[in-house]
Image (cartoon, rainbow, N blue to C red; front, side):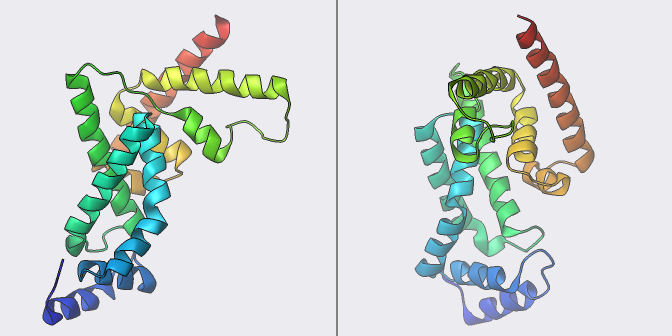
Length: 210
C-alpha cells in the first residue's frame, strides 16, 4: 500500500475538496493509503463493531460474521487508495460489507444453506424494538416471541429487501446512504423498503392470528 510523495500530495489536494469527508477522516484515509499500520488499526477499531453487527444481521451466524468482517477490511485496505470521497468512509465500508455479504449469500443458496437475520444479536446489542422501560419474566418472554416472529418474517424476504430493511431500520442509514451501499437508485431503495414492509406486516399479522 505504498505511494509516492507526488501521489500523496495529489490525494491530499483532492481530499481537501471532499464534501462528505472531514479533515480528520481524510487524513486517516491518506495514512491508510500510504500503508501506515497505526492508521489501519485505528480505522478497524472505529468501524469493526459496525461491520460485524451488519454481518450478523445479514448472515445470522457469528463465525460467518467474523470471517466476513475480515474479508471486508482486507478489501478496504486493498482498495482505499481508490476512495474519492463520493460518500462518507462509513457508507463506503457499508457498501463493501453488503457486497461481500451478497456474494456469500449467493454461495449459500448454491449450497442450499438457509440464511437468517440474527435479531437475537440485534436485541443483545441494542435492546428490543418496543419500549425498554418495563422488565420482568413476562416482558422478556414477549420480547423473545417478537424477536422470533420478526426473524421468521425477515427470513422470507429476498436478500436485497432484507438488506434494505436492516440498513434502514436497524442501522439507521438515510435513503441516500442505502442507495450508495446497494449501488441502486434512491427510488429502488424506497420500492424495496415498501415491498419489504408490506410483506413483514402481512406475515406478522398472520403470526398474531395463529
